[in-house]
Structures are given as structure tokens and as C-alpha cells.
Image (tube, rainbow, N blue to C red; front, side, top):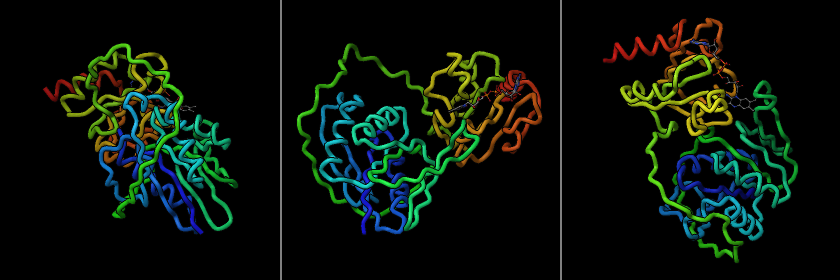
Length: 307
Ligand SMILES: Cc1cc2nc3c(=O)[nH]c(=O)nc-3n(C[C@H](O)[C@H](O)[C@H](O)COP(=O)(O)OP(=O)(O)OC[C@H]3O[C@@H](n4cnc5c(N)ncnc54)[C@H](O)[C@@H]3O)c2cc1C
């Protein structure tokens, strides 16, 4: 028996999309796993690891429209009847996944962190109750629809995919209209940073002040969720369950308590420095180096040292 999965390839996160093959294989359990990737406007069609690539060409701007992408996934699913549809939980993926689940009339298991499949059942595991518990969700029917954070699963494969083109039936017109084009500000993607200077609610100064020290350390600035909620920083740089998953060599946590939801965004971090006024903060137990004291004072002293 075969278990056929469809992975929606995110053109801006190709390697993370390939990692989802591990999710598909684990979902297959004791069945033979067959994994297809849906690539829209894929430049490189030599993505090793997939059994097949289903390629669609579209005007680029339409790709930014989650409704258009939903229509395409629905058409592909209607044609191939996959047993699972897996989406990367990026900001855009999070807009697409619930729409697709609605169209396919299935539930969505969002942000899964582990899978337990055997011949009797498939269990998808995800954080629940604000991350204080892990929920194990038994999926009895197909297609199983799941979203997965980047960097949670990993896959390395050498299989050459069979590439085929998929012709889309007429799509509803996109609701996106280009009004103006602006240059990107060039902010560093925290997922690629080797060093991260991260501010939490205990860091009471302007977050943009940290750019200078981050720049000196050849790194990026990130934040915990409260700073985004207080409009002190963009969601683009939030680390954690509802933000991004990061894997730097060095993570400097300034006034970050270390809640489960925050720590969930730290994967394969080599060294953590935690600066906190409270010795008992959970982040301190994860850190290799703990500084008990005020975060701003620490930054001022570190800046002076680096100069
Ligand atoms: C569904 C859900 C999803 C969530 N997703 C995320 C997520 O993606 N990312 C995330 O971060 N959170 C997330 N959260 C929120 C999370 O539960 C915590 O509330 C949040 O991480 C706390 O942020 P914090 O540690 O910065 O703030 P706090 O919990 O307020 O901790 C502040 C810390 O700073 C210390 N401190 C205070 N003053 C100073 C000082 N002067 N110098 C140094 N240290 C000081 C304190 O001792 C404390 O440890 C989520 C919650 C839910 C329910």
C-alpha cells in the first residue's frame, strides 16, 4: 500500500520545503511513502528527494494571493487525491493552510512538531494550551492536512524527481492589484542569522538601538511576542511558536523569561546568553552563560567592550 503526500513548495524557503519530505515519510508509517512537490513558477526543478514535481506556471503577482494558491492546490488535489497535504507554516503558509482545509472539507493540524504513525493509526503531535501540553491528534480519515514550522523536521535525499506540468483550469481573478512598487528595506532574515540579539519584555529601551550591536556581531535583532503586541517591533522578527524558528550559533536573550512558546522557536541553537534580573527565569536554565542584571546595562557594557 502506498501513502501519497503533496508538499506545497515555498519558493522563498526551498530547503525548508524539502525538509517536509521527512514529515510525509513519517506520516506514511508502515506504508510506502510517495512524495510529490507542488512547485509554482519553480526556477530549479531539480529538487532532490521528491518522487515527483507537479509544476504550475503563473503570473508572479498571483502567487502572492492566498486565494489563488488555494484554488490551485484544490485543483491538484482533485486530480491526484493525495493522502496528505503538507504546508510550511510561514506567514503566507498560515494564510493558505486553513483556506485549503476548508475547501477540502478536512481539519487542519497546525504547527505539528512530531508524528507517531503505526499500522493502526496516525498521530500528529502539536503544542496545546499555550504550549503547556502536547496534544496528540489521531487522524482517521484522509487527506490529512498539516502545517509545519521550518527547521522542525530535516531531510536529505538524492532521489531525482519526475517532473510534470499541471495545466490549471480557469482561476478566479486575483484580488491583488499593484498600486506601487517600493524597494525592500533589506532587513536581515532572522532565520538565516548566525548571531541573534533578542529583546524580551524585560528590555525596556528602543529595540532599534540593538541594531548597532547586532551589526557589530554580524547578526540580527529579534524579539519575543510582547514586543510585537506592543507595536515595538515587527512580527517579521518575532521568535517562537507564532513567530519564526531560528538556529543561530549564538542567541543573546535580553529580558526574555523563556516561555515554552518562545523556546519553541529555538532549534539547534549552539550557545545562549541569558540576561535577566530574575535568577529563576527558565531561559537561564537553557543558557550556557547567565548574566543576572539589567539588560540595558549589559548592552551598554558590551557595546563599550566591542568598541
Ligand atoms: C498561542 C500562543 C502563542 C505564542 N507565541 C509566542 C511566540 O511566538 N513568541 C513568544 O516570544 N511568545 C509567544 N507567546 C507568549 C508567551 O507565552 C510569553 O508570554 C512570552 O514569550 C513572554 O515574553 P517575554 O519573556 O519577553 O516577557 P515576560 O514573560 O514578561 O518576561 C520578561 C522577563 O524579563 C525579565 N526582566 C524584567 N526586567 C528586566 C531587566 N531590566 N533586565 C533584564 N531582564 C529583565 C523578567 O525577569 C522576565 O524573566 C505565545 C503565547 C500563546 C498563548
